[in-house]
Image (cartoon, rainbow, N blue to C red; front, side, top):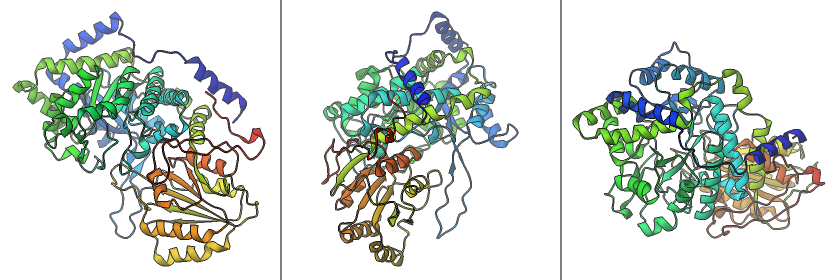
Length: 613
């Protein structure tokens, strides 16, 4: 990266040091706007403010049924907010080839244009949000995708984490998005957690709290509201709430000593919002099967014990953990009764508004209760200065979203996260000659769903630049016995083997393992390797390393983003230092904090120092 851009990134970081992380009090004019706006609202408008509906950010003509459906929600049903997603495309309903992916990324200009159109339809500006845990690139093409939170845990740099939050906020505001449903404040101390996993900063509550707080500060210094999730803590669970209700069985003493530690730190850092999780809480006296999303006791714990008075969002109400409990209208009412301010992503936002209106009319929800949430929502909008203008300049989107300075932040996190867990025989960096025959195996959990981040797209070409004679093979749980036997038979012909393992803890899949046949293959190759280099690179779920503990050299990246693949290749080529530390314990293999150090193989100029906070 050019020196000028490195200096620019450094200036941006240093300029904001010492900025306040807490939200400023409203000035008198903003306070008057909140009160006048609330008092002028009809009951129907107040009910609408409590609902946040979904909108896709692929190109959307205003003369389409899809656009009109969203427009009717904000114009006619008075829905007060929108959560932006990417988009979806139809998948053929075929057997034997389940590899198509339906999810696609949105477009930055389309996102900003659609939100501008919708903002112009309303009297009270819309509060817009996104699920940008690992950067806006998580949903929007061309924006920056950060490594997942566990990579930040391995890098262990609070100032770098803060800068990542600030950079994410700049891209969000450039699109007209105001609330980030991040950071994840869950402590992932359960190796069998199928959905949090690398979305957590780690398993040490204090470190999770410190890094979550840093991300909060960065987001809010950039003019975005940060959201701590999933209250009171989703880390020690073994059920994906996209497919079922999870249970957090611990009592209050345990919650205070572990799960609540990062939330307390995030609240102290000035987080403007908290998201409740779909987690049953028998340990605090809640009835069986009642998730925190619908629990008055859970929200009271947040409001009274943690003294949090910001916005409380439900997690998505489309998730299976709650969607089947009752009708969309009834679930919305229960969520507001529990103390949530905003009902997020209902399967039927119009029905949610109707349910709330009916509950107000019947007296089930008092107008005082509704006004309390409406006031918080309007205060958030005023704090963001939306009453002064909520649309964005489309000509400036290209200046705000993406770019080399922002990419430098992601690359630096990925590089500092690289953790060398084992290296018997000093195999890392690889020192085989450039004409060596290298076997590269991409070992996947399953072949479906890789449309947005196909494995090896950066890693393989980067290795091939140094070792041109690479044979690259992709395997998965669908690989046949003859195919696996062929790999076993051909492996001895190579001078070195690189095994890149890609295992996701993907929302909605309920899966997080490597097929036993693939584990056996890697074990067999390890035994047959002898003195030849064989290096295991784990992209994604790091707990898989415990299944492959016999491999003599193990490198962890905690993600499968472009930045993480690039960083791993640079580490193997000796172009960057290695110094990441394991932010979780790997049962039977390594404790928290494990990790070996390596210097770059060449001159100091070979090291990438793209961003130096």
